[in-house]
Length: 260
Image 1: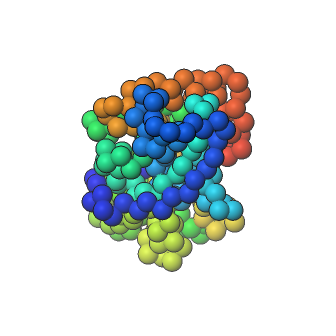
Image 2: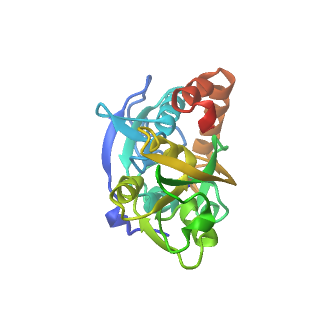
Image 3: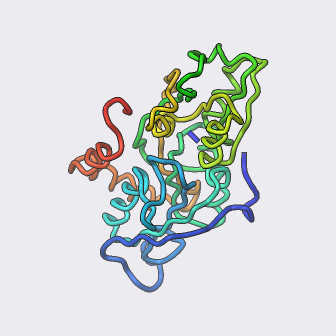
């Protein structure tokens, strides 16, 4: 999925989410946490079904997983809403804005130069979202069309590499601007991660024209140096969640078989 904005532009609207058994005082965990007793998570919200706000709380597949991970580490959880560019470039993490990034981020060699990733937790595809009555059935049909993508994402890269030369590409900061552009006719199609595009098919006005197997896997991100103990703990909790069935319950909560 879903290079970097100046850190001053990174939004830090935060919302605290509480897990059990927090500690008080200085950070003696050895994990170099931004705030003692708290796992501070950066995410680009909204990006449903992975992260979105509902009832004054951040939720979604990523958020629920991170909440369970924080609970298993005996930490509270706090969320900061940041721009995806600042997150995937490593700027937000290196500045100490947060401890970990959870934002449907594809593990790539380029990103791994600046970040360290957890074990993969989700396999994704790219996809082409079009209006229900569109005659676009294939990426080859995009000749002369305008393609909407989210900036800094693997969807943007896929579009650059595969759309016809005479197609125009427009990049948007987030899905919050991208999907409305399709709704208003500002772009003809949206090319981005399949699970997110699938959410926009509800209601029947839009449909998935094509899927692309890009062998992408999402991972949680930490800064390249100094977060080794944190990353080890996160991977340990991920394994526990898979083993005890919690991961499967959360997966089923947000994805049906046809969205897998």
